[in-house]
Amino acid sequence: MSISYELVKHYPWLPSKKIHYSEIASKDPVDFIKEKIAEYPDGELVARIFNIFKTAFENIEEIKTYKADELNVYLYTILKILLYINNSIPIANRVANLYSKHTYNKLIREDNDFNLYSICKDLELEIKYYDKAVPFGLIVEKDRKQVLQTQFSIHYIDYLKLASNLRDDYRKLVHNALIGGYVLIEKKDLTRLLQEVVRKKLIIEQEKDLSSLDDFKNKILEIKEIKELNERILGEWELKKEEFEYSFEIKYRKGEKVEESFPPCVEDILMKVDEGQNITHIERLFLVFFLHSLEIPIDEIVNLFAKLPDFNRKKTEYQVEFAKKKGYSPHSCSTLKSYSLCMATKYKDKLCLEGYYSKKLDSQRKIQHPLFYVQFKQYRKHKPKEEVKTKNE
Ligand code: SF4
Image (cartoon, rainbow, N blue to C red):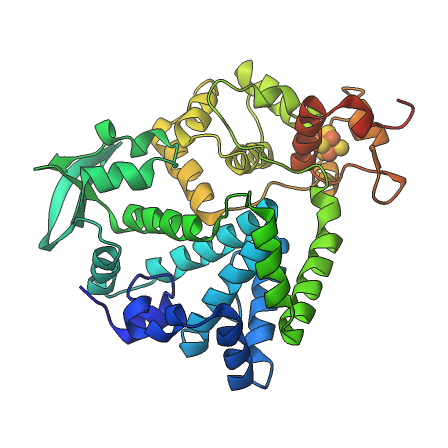
């Protein structure tokens, strides 16, 4: 089933692009890029690509310059080529996260269910659409009852394939309603699965055959506009990289004790939670945002709050899920200080009090963000000691 030309312009990662834009696949990439640059002499193509990288490096979740036009399709192809030639997993991950989140936001706003159905079909997913919503669950909260219903179901094999990277407990097959091998799925959850499809299309594996990569890269960078664009992208990355100098995966993995790298401000709140003390609204929010940033599963976060005196499971689940969907970032050190939540002095934490030595800037730097604290501690745990030093070490 091929889908409309219009939809491909909105979502250029769709397989039907091959049908509507068959010339892209048949052309030599260098000729293709040269041709498109000539077609858009006002520099719009280059400007829009640069904006995607810049937005990704700044951790913003919406691509302001995104337009569902023909250029969007060409731009996507060139974006993938640039990610490939730079062969940088952190850069590719940043762009993949931005692009897929942007796609999620676009898809969730689609009021035409048939488009969502067509997109799934184009991706060769076994999907069913019911004209009349099918009830599949009930939420009972105090005196309020809510019937869960949906018009979508997806074959369980496809569901498992797409949900395999999403670690939330509620996504496990056993927690979902099935009819004849199909998982009944709400539109927002189906869209979240599609976000993962898009993310995977943009992430890269580290290229092993470096000589053929170099050959290809040299050919692409012979195009003056692309060479300049790539230099600007890498320059922008350099500027931002300081924040990520010690960055690598700090995502939650079952059995791994990431909490050993938590900063004192988080430790202190966790201690209060553990003792069943009341915590303030700000502390609660900060803790939820912080744990979400590490991709700790929702059910583990909810269970953590179960020790609090005013715990209400349904309400907490709703609030934790809502915060996850919004993708809020945890507060920075300066904000936490303004709320008197910085615990550097109380815990006499050397990293928080003295900062760290930045090789790149050849100077001592202050910790600006609790997430950076975790990254630094994890980096220190995995790298040879001489590579990471705090002052006086
Ligand atoms: S310096 Fe930052 S990371 Fe350290 S305790 Fe204070 S707020 Fe937390």
